[in-house]
Length: 221
Image (cartoon, rainbow, N blue to C red; front, side):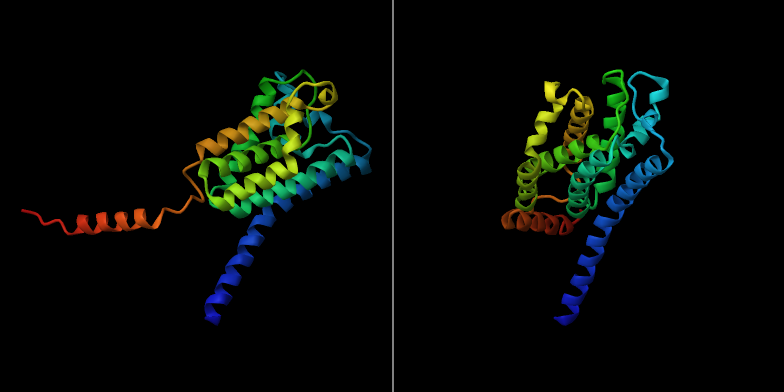
């Protein structure tokens, strides 16, 4: 009994560590870029996304690491940390596929469908992760994952207003928010049969076992 408890504890520690390491690595990169801008007195906005511009193409990859101010950075870091750790902990088997799907799709679509200005910041990631965690929990109909959906709605339900071109959002990249959300929603649908699933009822599990037994009891004639 003690051995089993110890092994489970060790596995849980590794799982928590894994869920933290990649998000923290990205946050360190964001913080480092902003610190370099501050110390060197430079502005790296030109590494963001500028739609339909060749110069703005690198921003598909680089823009999430560029922020216009410390306030902008810290606002994004807090939400990104919570949502990304949740993804990597509860969806660990598909977490990297989901994250990079959101990353590339949101950035590419912003390049094709945004205002002709420089778009910077990790908000696309935040909206994409929010959409994935909410929609995936609903689709899978598994109570722990549904609880995560409700958790996301409780914390970030108001984010929905950031996806529309209303007056308060015009200084912000509402297009980046919208494309990020759509990317997350698509990822939830595409990967719905991968990762954690709702357990089968006991009756169904027994039926499947019976079917397997019947299969192996077939006699050739």
